[in-house]
Image 1 (cartoon, helix red, strand yellow):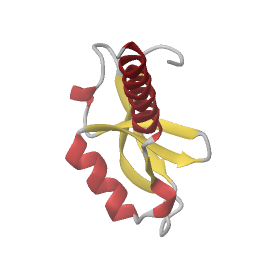
Image 2: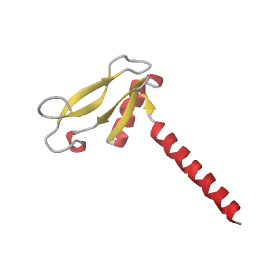
Image 3: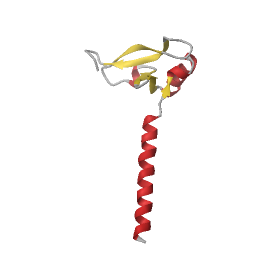
Image 4: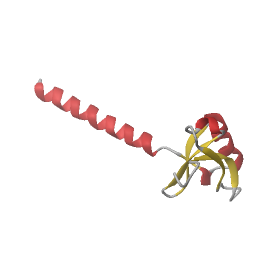
Length: 99
């Protein structure tokens, strides 16, 4: 009985870690879709992390309301399948210096 419970526990733990890893990896890749699709994703979410290339990503927002207090918004352009400089919204930047 102990062996069975131990096996079940291990399977559940492995499945949990695998699911968390997959969720962390899941991210929209702007290079695979249209500019309109990338804009719609940001608009629908309000704030979202988008992939813009291999190991490249950033957080894009629709307005300053999604930034922390004191941050400014900066227009954000990403590469898409049909537009190399697609405006998707904004990124949040600290008022002074880099974030």
